[in-house]
Image (cartoon, rainbow over all chains, first blue to last red; front, side, top):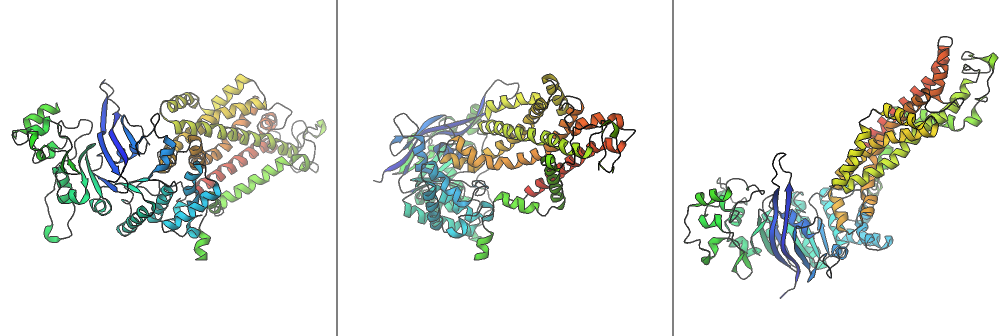
Length: 343
Length: 287
């Protein structure tokens, strides 16, 4: 049994929305709503979902870039930022992040080697050592140090800049790297190169990845496990092959059927899901997906489904998959139930 | 290979300076300002005669007189010498308040912008009180309240410019703070002071610097204005604004001489503005 490196427990983040001038009611966007999961050491967990489902917020909460409303991050069995737990500054070294926008994540006034060596210097590495290390890392990510170390970000291409961002993250010698849409902005050929580089580095540095993406192909390629999020909650989670081949949640199935097929015979005109995601300020009652789900019954609008295993490590939050949930006996009159609930 | 290596590693300021070399107007203005500054700085050695020596019989000599190249003023003092010495105070009035306000304003703006939230709001609303007054009125009011004197008018001008520079620095800092490289720096576990020094300052300084160069001419004109009104430099000290005032009585007798200090103010402030424009367009490069 491989050890669990990162545990996320009941993480919650509600963003306050500026209330109407005349209304006293304080409203909240339910960005991340009570999610818990484990990340196994040495494996890649892919997080997928539509835009606005809370993927990036989850990443930023784990990275401690914003405070969570409640919940805990446990790293190697130690609570991060807790008394008697892991100090935040030491945690920073162990967990690093690569952002989507390769240009915005590099300081335009610093050279590449200055950018990479800044982090280690914060952690009391001497300037000379940090620069030597930066040169080594540049070579590791496939950039000639003699050519690139003294350049500025605007002199690099998108793929090269993202390699620099990866090198900057690796300079801390981290155990976990969060890749927040790290390849989304690159074109396909460069994307493939960077993904292969990430695979090689993972093996070499014994890394664990949290790979956030909306691109299901890419997630399939790089992940060992996959987690599907919808409106701030986990709807399905499990080994990637199992989830992709035997998706249990109607939302996951809809997402997977939305992948464009390479086979012209399989071209489809039908949209897999209708409508837009509901307003996260007033999420639907019960199962949050029920108002877009073709299988929804009365119980879906009234009872929140819990994450339950369908197979050993494959969990899903859907009443349809749990014989004891009462889905089979529930009436199909969703309209009445949801109309009553949304009020 | 070697040519690729050579183009690499050009810093932002290097590129800006390189760009500035292709702006003839800005270069000419810079040269003109250099001459004016040199003449003012080395006035004690360059000036043909004592700027304080009065001579009742040589009053208001015309331009081109044998002993006085630019004539004499209403008390018979050599105009060229007085203009050179006057430049020292006038240029000081232009540069010193802007520099002081640049240092103070950038610091406050960086702090307010980086901290954000309520503290930012309190600082900015307090400065808006100053911002609400026209700058001329504010300068006159402050130096009027403090009493005449050069130090007081320098102080007044500094106070006038601080809110404007804070506002520019704060708005740029607020933009920069949201960028991913600041998040990445925070991920490194660095202290806020280090992040501001290494990652924020360098990216805020440029726009604030451009704005400050634009204020140089305003500051000089306001400083001369204060002296003209009797709120700044006191006679017999030479200063362009004050000279303009004392020569008013001679405007019908020797209009050219009466106009000389004004011409100096005009030329210098135009040169400041054209240089500021040049710097602005040189910095407007794709980074």
